[in-house]
Image (tube, rainbow, N blue to C red):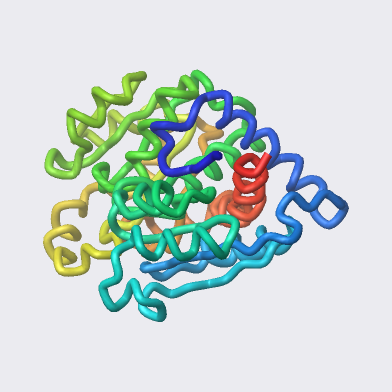
Length: 298
């Protein structure tokens, strides 16, 4: 049985297979008669709000022949304090797989253990593996293999998105530079576990120099709203803007996993100039999600 709980535990070979199949699903959308989820029902348990993740998984499950059951955590017994392991042991007897978007990484791990059905981490506070697989697919369909390239992440380098980038970089052989204030850099323990060519710096301009891809995310992640004022102040100098883009390679891509807060982590000018890439990245969530599900049930 396969799960996607973390990119740390996903092999390079499996990552490459998902990326390859995402391209196939995109090219053959509407023409592929194969339905690997035919007759299956998949639970989508969301404790955090979502646009792209929810829609891409619901549509993806449908297009693969299955049925998606959207379960807001507040509408089921989880919202009244039922342990995740008990919810898992119930749903594991009724559905064929689960997609979970929540706060604690331990919740998706416990669900996979006690539910004994294929389980997808659709975002936790620790990782966002589906997003980063999509981002790499988006880069490679435009620029070829990401191996040997330079990816620069600008902003909160200690949140779930850069942490998944860290594990992907080590597995797929590209350089990752994280530009962030010292208190917003990933832990030494995570960097040691990952290995690979990964560096952290407070010097955003040096990190952007010669980059193939500039990437950012919101400064105030879900669950961090109480820290909003302090975060905005601390991260104010870590914006992707036209001056920073000039330091990257002339053909560098700019990506954002959305939603974007213009004139905070990215300028309006740069966002609109690179909107085609950013919204292709959003669209590609569907194709990559389908490839992930197909890989899990193969």
